Amino acid sequence: MTDRKPCKVCNFTRQKSYGLVVPSLDDLKIKGCEFLGFSPGEPVTVVLEDDGTIVQDQAYFLCLPPNTKFMLLHENETWSPGCRMDGGTAWMARDSMVLEADTVDSSSAAARWWHLAQQLKQDLASIILMSEADLQTLVDAPCPELASAMGFEEKKAEDLQETLQGVLDRREEERQSKELLQLYLKAAVKGDQQQEVPSQPSQEGAGDVEVDSASGFMSRTLMVLKGKTSPETRLSTEELQMVVTRGMEAMEKVLGWDRRRTSVLLQACEAELTGRLQQVQAVQSIRSNTQLGREQRAEEGVETSAQGSN
Image (cartoon, rainbow, N blue to C red):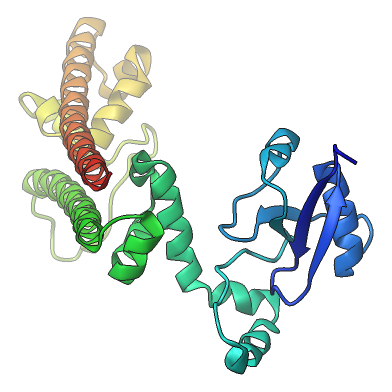
């Protein structure tokens, strides 16, 4: 009997709780399902009742102290902190727990920020991988309760929430800057196109775009290629891409030029296209480096807060 471990099991509502003596994690699942009335062979997840830590490793199970209390969860059930109530109000807890699993999941906002707080407590660097919704959940959490969950003083919890709000603000600024940059690039291209489009007779539809059936190019593109000085600077990025993709032989036929002249044009278009793409990549690189630097500073701020609390 020395290799057997005394422990306790309960279901996710904590209404049923039983004492067991088992030698292994697998035996805990089998006997726990039997005592709790689960169907034989039904898949369950074993977690620690007090903090929801998932127990999957036999060695970890054996390292836990005697009389540890475990909770067995179905696939559609989630762990949440237990409600500490006196006997006079315990019936309220029981009634509130007798709900469908979906209802329990949808009403577990408090449990959500608690889980996130535990994740940060274990690894402060996880802030970088958290979504904006997760960060907002932690910012909106009650500060005293967050401090208790993290093991911080309340002032440290306030500093943490301010840091998280700063991360949210910076992400929003970066998103807005990216959107403005995209709008600027679209407006610049559209402006170049409008400057080059000649005035059309009033009887033509304003929204009509003439396309040369033989070449597949717009009439306006062919006009710029054949009749403008430095046509590569007057074409949109999409038009440059189309010209470069067509290649030498196709463009010779489209333009009706000799090979030397066509080659010069293609080289100029390719150089212009490369330059534009490099500019976009440079802007994106600057934005990425800026974001990385801000997140690193945010992480350092969180680590400083954590160190100060120890």
